[in-house]
Image (cartoon, rainbow, N blue to C red; front, side, top):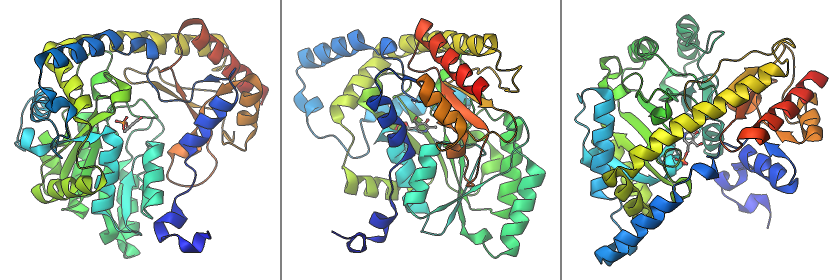
Length: 416
Ligand SMILES: Cc1ncc(COP(=O)(O)O)c(C=O)c1O
């Protein structure tokens, strides 16, 4: 078969960087991965899931093994809405079970939203840096990701954003901006959270220029703040974002059982939510009813909240191990800088100016020689070009292995 026999989409989709990184790890068994955004197997709720499965079987309702509703398990949707409203401290958009859909990971919701809001050539405004797998989704769909400028510590640069809006207006492209994408809680990759003031400032500026633009707040790590708080309220509770459709996404893959792949989307706009449901119907007409029943059981029984407590303390501890090991190895003296995370699974490090951390650069080659993997910063930035930053994850490794990974990374970094 020739590429010309494929559709435009078929010709566009290419090998995702995430798969390249995973293959590199699988091909070299001795390699320690600080790249994977996986959770820690030791924290996965094997016993709770087994107990839930037993109780579901004893309850005798075989419908848990039947197809479920396209929108998802009603009790689980109600629980998602209630948690969201509790964290937001109010519910001006009237979010309830009817405005929540369960998806096959929040990744599916990202794909549904981008596909239904944007045509090829349209623009999504993204943060700098942002979730690199979403950048690849956009690329595959032929949608342009345009980075919103950020200041030195990753804070939104509102003056720069104003200039960007002016430039898009001048080039006649402002109307092509269809979506604003924010990873606003303990972001992947930066671990940074947007403060309420920052999110309000972005809303005011963007809505003045684009009153009906949609906003998608990806809250994948919201409940993984180490202090246990939900952080700033979501865009649902912010009048600065009134006027266009609002979506907030979340997932149980980081906070409970990763492999069950249960995520969710909440939306305040009937048309958009309806179309996302139709399109999900085309894709799979419903997320696994059994996986949802297991998650719902955990939420109802309290096992989910107990697990969350354990995860927060585990990841806070592992963050401390990686952070301390990197500092001990002298990375700061060699011109590297980073902030210790207060939630999530990542450290985002900036190397000396001019360093190329990309797959073809000297650091990646040195890291492969040392047997350690990281995510190059250039993957997480919407503009092509060299980047001196890296994402390191403390999700998978722990203890001595995590320290060894840090040592290997530091040896590589100090050698280039
Ligand atoms: C910011 C962000 N959003 C969405 C996802 C998708 O997660 P899942 O499909 O497992 O819910 C991830 C996964 O790493 C992520 O980091």
